[in-house]
Amino acid sequence: MKPLLHAALWSLTLAVALIATSVKSTAQTTPLIVYDFHLGPSPTDNVDYVKSLGFAGVVTRLKDAPDLAKLERYARYTASMDDFRLLAYVAYDFTNEASPQIWRRALPTLAKSGAPLWVVVRKAPSDQAIRELLLEMAEASQEYGVRTVIYPHWDTNIETAEEADVFIDAIRHPNLANSLHTCHEIRGGNQYDMESVVAEHAGNTALVAIAGAKENAYAGPPNLLVNWSDVIKPLDKGNYSLLPFLQALEDAGYEGPVILQTYGILNTPGHLEASIEAYDDYLDQIVPKVED
Image 1: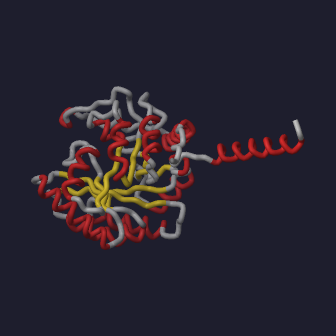
Image 2: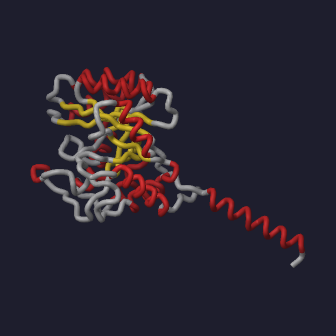
Image 3: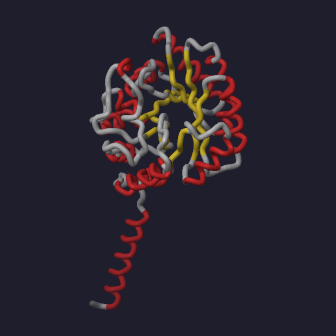
């Protein structure tokens, strides 16, 4: 082979190899965020702990007045952390007199943290009341430059992403988004059709939460539920593969946060570390989306 032709072919081979090794899936650039369930009362200690494990953020709950003070402590401590995300979900209960004040009082702190108004809706008197609430939230959060995101949750007024999208389509406000949760979609009977769920709803999804699960995880009437241990496990436990769900997110171009759901996981030492390792294993198997 002539030297110049050999050199040209070598350069072309090297260029192709560099391109191939530089292609990464969206998921591979999305480290896990984790709920602060069972971590402890100190936001600073919680942040330091999960950061030391490799998590890129933390989620806390907003239900009553003390939760607002906790959120503020989280916000102050994480304000200068460019590589760490603070999120919070609002447990809105129409029978709780504190609920209307909690989310409004949280808005300034959520805005400073770049966090959406992420809301679970419980015990609503009617669908009309839910629509009015979500519209009010979407308009108010827009004034603060953050989105309102529906948190579909089994055994509440909005249980799945499909039900959330019904309200989103009815309200038709540009500042209202959805979220996807493997545990609640499984509870809703979608465990064998997760790719379709993602394909249909990922376009307006702002947040995603995942957990390990049993292959035959329970789906059915809430009054038969005992606990969440079949659909909320460390990512290395259970025989339900999350790869189709994560691959579907990649194929749909989802670029938002991915959150590890840890509710009810107790007496399992090292489960956070094990979940990060299992998540990394999933990422290694994801085929990057080919851009048009």
